[in-house]
Length: 264
Figure 1 (cartoon, one colour):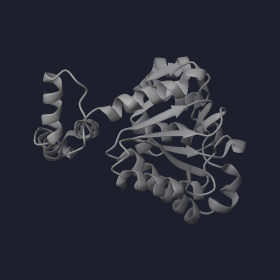
Figure 2: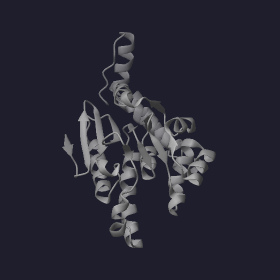
Figure 3: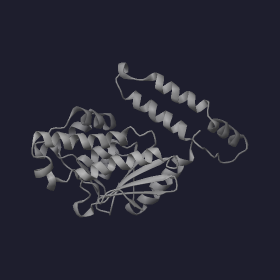
Figure 4: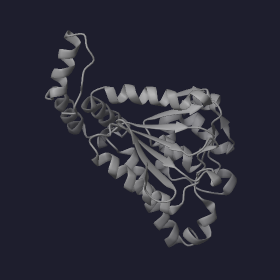
């Protein structure tokens, strides 16, 4: 197990990289140093060809991520300059995760609050335990949310549920989150790790170039029409057809065996 900073853990299980927010005493609230470590971990997983998918989760069974570590706000976010620095570091790390070409999965148990919701939304897939709790309490704290973060939530749950989440500031249970479309699926808490492992194993067994192309196309689809890079989408699709993996996929199908994809 490789520690990337005191409060962050990076490890691998087969072809799956695990990034764990390790501050259970504060329900995995995220400090500035933790955000810095997030960026380093994501970059390392991105550069490692053996890693084909990434799972993001929190240590312990009480929380995924409960938001920012408010205890350091008096020092790290007390002035406009300090707030700008904090926001730049956290946004850079979050963007690295969101734009990662490899598939990402949020494994959510317990509290997923504020910045924890935004972190989960940066992942491609969200699998939650039935004891998960979600909320964005900005209206209870007098905080403003930037357009990009609001827009990300709107794309996932739609405008009506996004307004309900922000207007109320209340916590939603896992069943409500599933109804909203905030999470992909909900499983019993005792089955969460096994369910995530099974899904991740399915993903890493498929063709990496195909998955990367889909992620590219979905990302462009979420942009305004005039900002879409359709050439990049077509290039990603063409790369699939030109790959040895495409040959392997066809051959394995004809031979009635499981394909062995090599991302090339």
